[in-house]
Length: 443
Image (cartoon, rainbow, N blue to C red; front, side):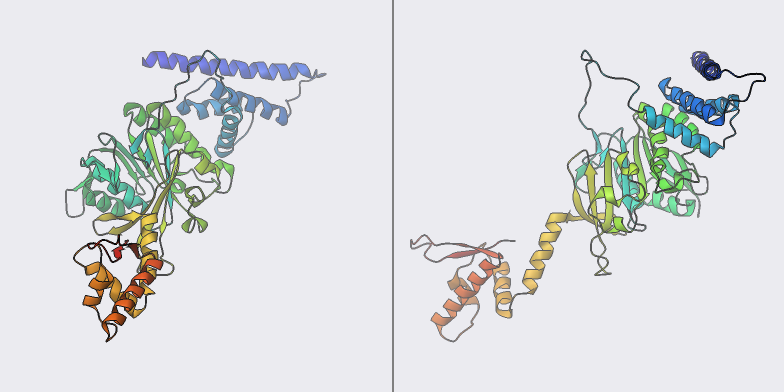
C-alpha cells in the first residue's frame, strides 16, 4: 500500500513539473527573441507559478506534499520567495479554485444526511465548531468539564444530551502551560496524579500539546496532525486557542486569518474529525448577543465554521458579584441561550436566558410593591391552598378597624396585584361554593 501511494505521489510530482516546463515553453514561444535568450520576465514566471499552484488543488495533492512541491516549482522557475510568501500564494490558489473543481450533473444522487450532534444543539459531529469568549470567562473549563462528564458516561450536560460514547480526544492546548492544563484535566477526570506535582493524561485523551510543547497550524504541525487523524477517525480535536496555534505573521484583520483553519479542516474532514476551536473575542464580542460578532478578527473565520458558540458575562459591569454567564449558540441548529455560573465543582445551569430575564423582571416588580402589597403577596405565597379569596385574606390581615372596610381593602390590593401580573383572578360562579373571586399566584 505504501509503495502504491509513493508511486502515485511521484507520478503527480513529475506530471506537474512537466506541466511547468510546458507552460514555460509556451510563454517563451509566444514572444520570439533575437540573439541570446533573455530570462523570462518575473511577472510571467509568477503567472506560471500561480497556475501551477492551482494544479496542486485540482490534482488533489496531499497536504503533506503540497508545500514541498510548491517550493520545487518556484525553484524550477527561478523565483526567490520566502516560505511565508509561498504559503500565501498557495492559499490564494485554493481560494481561486475552491468549489470550481467539479459540478453535479442531473443524474447525480446527492447525499444530504441530517445534522448529527456530538452534544445536542451545541457541538456538531464531524464538523468544525468555534467557541468565542473574553479571557477568564471560562470557555476552556466549560469544554473540559463537558468532555470529562461525557467520558465518565454521563448522558447529558447543562440539559443537553450526548450522542453515544465519548470519542478519542486530541488536545492541542498551545494557549496554556502544563501547570494550568494538568490540574484542570485532573479536576474533571481526564488526567491522573502520579506524584506530588506530576500528572499523566488518560483515556480518552490520546495526544496532548501545551505551551511547553506546542503544536501550530503550520506545515510541520499540520503534517503531524494529518498522520494522527488518519489513524484515529471520528476523534474530537480540541484546539485552544486559535490565535496561539496560528503560524507567525498571520494578520487577524486580513482574510488570510481563516486560512490556517481551512488547512486544519482539509486535514481532518476526510477522517470525520469533530473540531472544537476555542477563540478569544474582542472588545465588541464581550457585549454582543451574536456568536458571529463575538469572534475576534476577520469575518472569514466565523464564516468558515458550521457552528458558533459564545460566552459573555451576564451583568458583571453593573454588579461585580454577579458571576452568571450567558452561553449561546448560532449556526446550523436551533439557537440556544443559557445562563450558567461557574463554581468550585464546574458549571451550574441557572436556566434559559428567557427564564432568567423573566425572573429579573419579576424581582424588579416585587421590589417596587408598596408595603401593603408586599404583605398580601407574601400571604398568597404562604397560603396553604393554591388560591385565596378576599375573605380568607381579611382573616389573615387587618388593614382597617371595620370589617367591611378591611374586606374592601383586601379586594382592592388583590386587584392591584392582578394589574401587576403577579396574580390572576378567577371570577366566582355565583353558587354557594364559589361566590367570591379567587386569586392565584402566577409565578
